Image 1 (cartoon, one colour):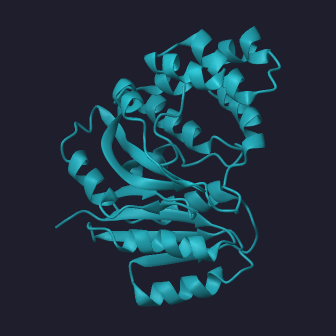
Image 2: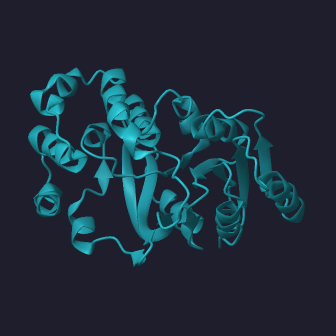
Length: 277
């Protein structure tokens, strides 16, 4: 029998987008799934929708918080209540393509779990002017196997991974004290504590939607503070104290590039420079 896969979805006040996200999970070619939706005290029609969809499809479970506490706590509630051997996430304003879970399960069966902690994939970006595909050249140049040290340079996995549920629980899920970068912080803790790697699969099966008017779960202005907290909590003091980190660049993109270039340049930075300056 196929192993159960849990998909967790945190949500707040965007029921139309949530419905699209949930439908994309229920349409998966891999059918042995459970969907755990945790609502952050929404005031729109989310509660009615959750009741209806859970009656319609018994693979859907939901939790409603009485007070707002943020997406991290929502994710952790789902992780704590997950019954699947495997787990992955979905933001309520994004959606899966039909084979995402099947793609991950097939690849997981091929890896050495003593060496690899999680998998991640490529994604499409839905913008107001259409769909943006991953850059093929950059995808070929970027490492397909990463370790904890690589995450000091960039969040290569993005906002979602596929792993065993016990792995996420072993690091106590997401840190709710992080104002942003909660995903990067969690991936780093997994790789640094296990000493394992993470592998990218080349399937494009996730759509990251930035075309709508709703705010994304993480706000841009929180990223600078989150970066500092991330470096501090993981004892990366050399990066914090570097004069390159402390330079007050108004353009955050330039600031990010300079830090990456100074500390550990990768081939991909040669291509990034043309778009940053």
